Image (cartoon, rainbow, N blue to C red; front, side, top):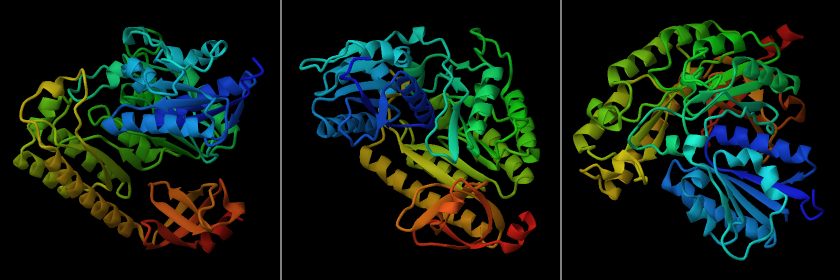
Length: 448
């Protein structure tokens, strides 16, 4: 390593998968002798892992580049990730960027840093054709001691008309089952209590496991294998497509010793007409059945939903179908996305474009509905005794943690509770949307 390249800082935009990959890249560099520092320090190198799911993510990347330049005007700025794969030339023109790495190249960052110098012109670009991203690099995040994001799958073979992810990450492919289990054991050995399974389309796990398009294993087999790993208190399934969340998987989670009662299931629209225009692989009847199956077996489960408003052709009537569908479902919260036109997607050429102001209005309506759903779910849990895994941050004298069913809980900061699971009685919903607690002394004494 050259003497000028000593410290490196990282900033991650977007999903849990990006955080897992950033953490893996950071370990590569620290193993090679670089010193990891915070992003606001005057680092020699700034690495920005980007997202491009929404237009705002692209704009945020530019703001982060400026932040790096402010921390150290002479620092080298490397941009990688989905935005870098989709629009490498656009990023290379951003003032201050020195190196752009695509989907294939980001895991070889060390080789590109060796001869990198501060650029006064356009950045170096190394971005493959997305068809070349047909391999799998296992990753997991380490940082927050209570939780790790474990990458099990990458890419997507679905052709949803609004989505750029297949263009940014390539075909669906999976880590080998043995590798996933070994990574889970490595995580457990570091006193991390919770694993969150991540990927682009994790329900498609097993496809491309050994470089072919067949499913060598299924997501269900993975769930069963992970449930047998010792040392992990909690395993949480991140976003999973409703058509790939099979009833037998729900059955296993309901009987599991480590998988928690929390599901996040993208809906996108409650109108079958719009779902077909989006080229989703299910209709509302299947989605409804999945939700009721979860509620039947896990009545206290937390169920999150993704939904897009303002998709082309979404009339007022179609939107109200979505609103009513969600209002009637026993769900816990929503992640609401305003549709934005993305280059090289099929939807960008669809007629019946919804005006921006109307999109924003619909977004606000669903965010209000989400808050009502969340408060109703939290209220239904008040008075219950539940285990909380406490996190390490001290925020103005309070510490926070999550129950197994994803209720955010707070108490007065106590360093001895960090990374510990504590049984508590949920007391009341506070003004900040968290739940305050009373210690469950009976449960505490039972453990002593």
